[in-house]
Length: 413
Image (cartoon, rainbow, N blue to C red; front, top):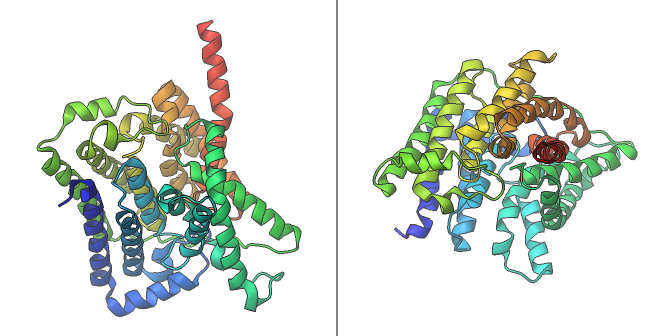
């Protein structure tokens, strides 16, 4: 096996196991029917594919998207690194509630067109192409709008999605300057701005995008098993390629700030990055099971944490942020177990670099502010931006970083 691509092959093995699990869980006929429903249904937040198409179809959809994205990097001969790992696992996570094997293509094609416009290799844009699919619900969301004739709604959705993909790369590069790398989900901030402009124009011309909340509430032991299997496989493969559990390197990893771009595969090796991913997955799955059952959006949050555990997240910089989010959730008017609050407590880890750079107190402040922001900004983009917490986290970072810097300058004067 080529060592440059061994993580890709590991991920493909895991994604194939998702497909097998899905078919065994629900049966092939039910999976096919469920996939059809997933493809046809609107995908704005929050659309839990467990509720739409069933658990089996959801895992098959996630497995297929994971294989597609990983294969793109293999075709382009891109060695797995932290950013690629984060992109693959984030996309697989959101394949549980918003991305499917059909709606991801127009935006990715738009990014490909931009690479041709710039006369550069698509390799330079493949990463942003996969992240940009956070706006994939745009494809069919125009169906049913009164301002659009039904026959043209799909065509309009395709054209708008392609245009979004075309403008996404330069906007994402610019948005990074706003938060200086302290919001790991930078593309969520970018998509938030794009979706807000799009939705504001829809509303201005008399259209509306209805709210949506589909949330699966039942417990399924099989789902818990396949996730635990996934995280244990990461840890075991880490031991295989590293020869042992590298405790000292893991301790050093946990001392980093996590600010973009802190690539653990480069700094500490693929084995240590995988070890961190597996540990983070088990810890945050255990945390989730204390207050909720696993469903599509929750798994999306877990997989996003796992993916970014190769690119900035670890226990030391995420726990303070989650603690701050938990305190906010306990004190505010929303239930601790409400869908939006549960997601905010997982996705608030986008602000982990604030805790890593400035200490746990500022991390708690960031997490505290993130929850209220995440519960509010969804109206602006009407759920079109799947990375709603990336948008919220980016705004919190833009607010906090200048204040923290001013405070530290005054203290050091």
